[in-house]
Length: 316
Figure 1 (tube, one colour):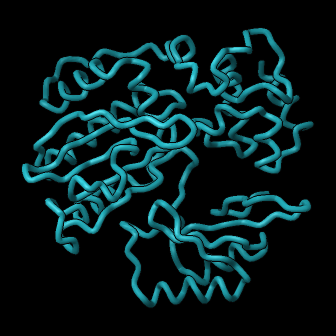
Figure 2 (cartoon, rainbow, N blue to C red; figure 1 turned 180 degrees about the horizontal axis):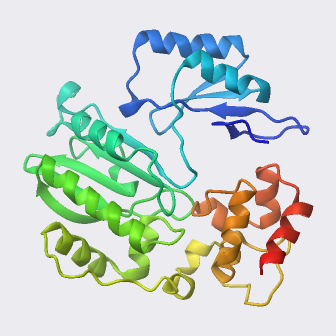
């Protein structure tokens, strides 16, 4: 069993180690808390790693030490469900930076309070930058917010990973309250219309003009019913690159084998999604996961393929 609130790290010689990542809103940490991180790492022979999400990973832990490490830290984990709002990355903003145009710390911490760990169709990342230098990498975030002399500009649909995508501009010259309102509209729209896909994949599937029109209509309080999207379009209109192999190989009726690609499995047999999640493969919208063979993914997650394949084939 996977220890609670831990991630399996690399398996070496059949030995497993685990990592835990406490939540640090905005990446801010006080000296006494930093000392606690160091003490926990020393006590359990762990390694500290600063992550790209402005957090500190404590890795190389043994399974039996995970719960004790959490107790010593006295903190909440950064991760919730596999598909949730993972992080809100924040630059120093006007509170600390001479170049900043807007208070990114205030906005970023409010977004963290409102959305961190909220469950989504796939993983979601946000970024807030106080000036066009974009130190929090807003152009490769699902929702990115950029400070300018005139206010905030909001972007949506960015991602890095195996299939990078730059975010699209949705609206500009927004004030603080308008940004929060627009983010709420986008999050709600994403929850209603997306399958297991990142926000950028949803935008590519339906088109940026439709996405922007629908979002701004709701934002401007037009109470006409927003057009609904048939979720079957997810099966029929996925971009080939999103599915990893570039060409669809699996067809309905085919068995799932060790070489089957995860993206193709969930595309052709969406009923396998709960099975994959039950085995601990929750992040099915991850670009790496969608392009992997099931055998490789099982090995990465430390799963027994002899158990997983029969369970998948049973539901199809």
